[in-house]
Amino acid sequence: MNLFEAIKKAEEKGVAIGHFNIGTLEYLKAIARAARALHLPVIIGVSEGEREYLGIHHVVDFVRSYNEEHSEPDGFHLFLNADHTHSIEKIEEAARVGFDAVICDGSKLSFEENITLTSEAVIKSKKINKDILIEGELGYIGSSSEILKEIPAGAATKPEDLTTPEEAEMFVRETGVDLFAPAVGNLHGMFAKGKDPKLDIKLIYEIRDAVKIPLVLHGGSGNSDEDFVSAIKAGVRIIHISTELRVAWRDSLSQSLKEKPDEVAPGKILPEVVKAIEDVVTNRLKLFNNIY
Image (cartoon, rainbow, N blue to C red; front, side, top):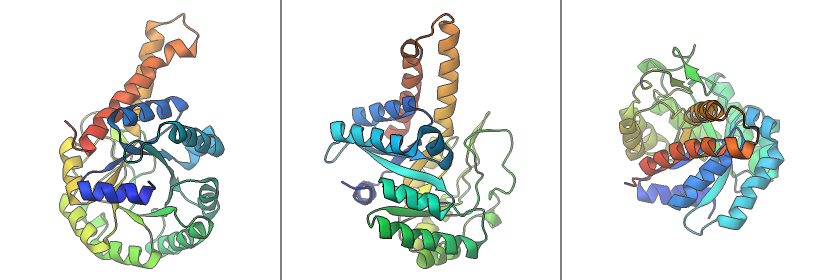
């Protein structure tokens, strides 16, 4: 099963595939554990910064080893996505080393510049790997998975700033992308107190009808369960979660160190951290896949 087939199955079932970014190998262990227990495919996301920290080849090797040992024909499988990639050079690198998908992020560019960059990404990456999926993003929603005190400067949150169905249709037609991530009220990061602003569900329906390809929701951390369910019904097939995992990692690590102040062995400090991340992933996967 490749990623295109997994998304097609999600479409048929009316569910969404969870996309979870990893910052350390503990994240990967936790995500794989949760997905294996539920017999579900998931997408492992690594941004340019995360790839630089972890090592792009190490990430590919670890994901491949999980799949070789545990992949199921119609269940658990780890797909690998080069999240938020801004240059053709980095996009081509991800295609060469075996990623399943790449996000060409031109969301800060003008509409015309974004189309030019994304079109080039589609052509060049598919020359390297014809099966790789290319995602385009239209509409700036902030750039960091962090705790927010206020809406990021320049982020599209007002109705007049969100991606329109007309822009979306033209962008997808001109670029030839396989997946599309619009700005529909979503934000990268999450607020320390309270939920993120509500998503524009009606707009998601309209964009899905206009582009006729699977939609991706970025910045899922902080959105309400009700918005997730409604967005999936409207046509979202991949949902990104990152900041929630970072918060679980930080809080559980702090607690573990507090409870074991004299412990120096990582294997005795980090199991609680893995479990905390696993719990977040499990809850999200159940929600996204209508499992109760």
